[in-house]
Length: 482
Image 1 (tube, rainbow, N blue to C red):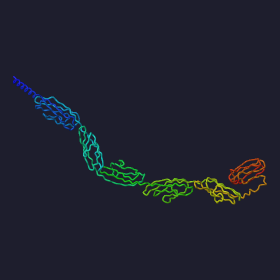
Image 2 (tube, rainbow, N blue to C red):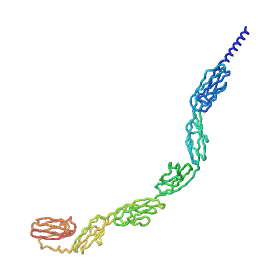
Image 3 (cartoon, helix red, strand yellow):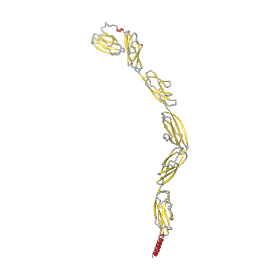
Image 4 (cartoon, rainbow, N blue to C red):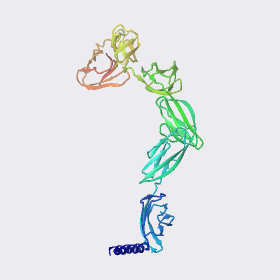
């Protein structure tokens, strides 16, 4: 019985196994995700009941879009655009068709690399290449890993850039063409304080000056000897223009500003330059840098000095004209052989007289004896040492009119007044008129007193004429006020 049971069990299992091998296949798969554009994803396929199974693949967005494989064959597909796509597969054998198995795959974009700039440069000129579009970079030659690199190739060079982002990489290249450089030196001379314009030695180019300018010519005001360079580049060549600028100093002028008494001559002199010119040119030029002048009025002069190399500058000088003291004089009349004091009014500090005097020769007043009429010249010296002169005309009179009038009922005394004089005229009412030697009326009074006193403190020294008139009589007299 046992033996019969075992035979039955084996027969049953054989029947069941044969029945399973004769079923439709069951297909399943896994696919690598995400992957980069252009990368072939890896597949893992498993098939249940594979006997004679053929798998049909549909790969949305892939190349190829459909594919047929056997078991255990794997599909090969690539993608050219980023996105999420569906992959489907089903199997067919002699006993039927399997259910459709599906998976999604994510395709990652490749980095979009960009390199700036791509250009032609001059030999050994430095240029910075900048990359964008990825997370990390590798530059060759050089194995440099920055996004921007500074390079100075001496020959034409191709640079290869590999950029990576999120596991995807891309490669691009750029080329730097190198042109030879011409070195062109120039030297020039200028004066300190002036401006100079330097123009590039290469036209129709781009320019890089050492002072940072990028135009074809620059205007500069260097204060000391300087060197400037300009890197000029056009489509044909490169040039490094070197300018040596020698700055010559302008003269440092020194000029005096004289003070002269009016009418005197003197000089304004300048030093510090090689040649000189003057404005206004009111005198004569003498020596290397002097202008001879006559002091007529205060003037500001400008002197222009030029150095041996032609650099110019200017300075000013003021001629200050000083005035002499103020002198006021009056003429005198004196009686012959009588002493008289003659004076000049003014603000001088010292005086001198011509003809020379023995007494008080440096005072503003002198006492003389009138032997004959004389013209005196008095010169005053002011605090600034400048002088001024005045003349005094002394007229000597015989003074016969001063003879004794003792028998006349009109009495006048003293006839040489030094502060006052008196008139005695006992006739009742009368009028007194006084005139100076220019006939100018000085005084007119009326009185009925027998004696009248007249003050002369404020009268100028000189000869005066008196007219005394009553109802019945008229008298004329002279009086000398000293």
